[in-house]
Image (cartoon, rainbow, N blue to C red; front, side, top):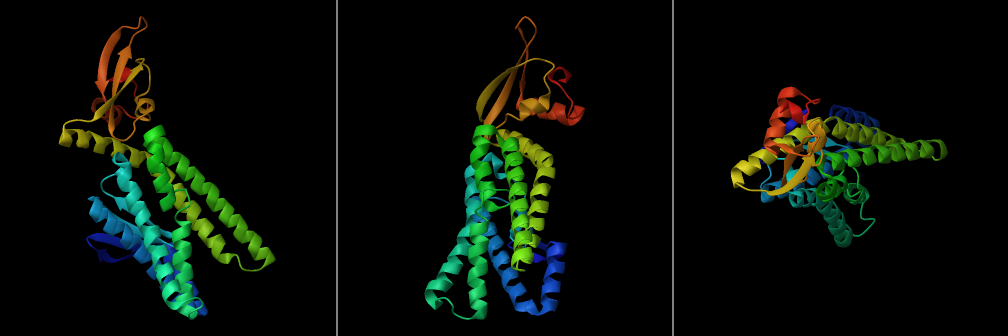
Length: 286
């Protein structure tokens, strides 16, 4: 459900999160729901402000119990430093707010203020875990993308996210059977797995946007550093593009059986051929 726009960025609440909030409110936890929602909203506004500072356009943010997922118009994978700064902004503001309230008002300071401190501290720390779709996962993906490429880094961080969600869900089940207090962790585990899985499903789409944006970046700036790859004509284009990393351009030298140069292709040509011929396209199709 869309709830409005802030600084030109659209906000919507995940339907399951909304239903969950209504149920908890009905159970007499209305103000707790308001505090959680406010903490998540402030956390995401911090991402927006940092994005504006870094010149990154964010189209929309979907609010989830542990944060949000942003739809970024310009993929930050081209400039990993930007993704790191934007991702860090949310946890920093959450932990800072918890710290300010703790040191100025003490702990315990009052029922709702105590909840505000706990929620912001846990939101900030939890989001620093190195798994997608959490902010820590985006930070680690930005670092790994320089080494193993954007696509592989996204796949691995999404896989780690699924693994962590299973751990959270399992611990929630354990607490439910031993202390009858694990319902919240079970819910977060389910949301976490769903969000991590969605990151994996959207990976191909995001990767193609990453490649096309790099092509536009070359057209805009006029230059990018280059990485040369030697390949055979029957090699699939998608396998070559999987090697792409931020801030450099792939140049493919195609050799025949006698190791003579048949042709040389730039990354832009590979992208156009892949889009035209489909995922099974080889260098020979170019």
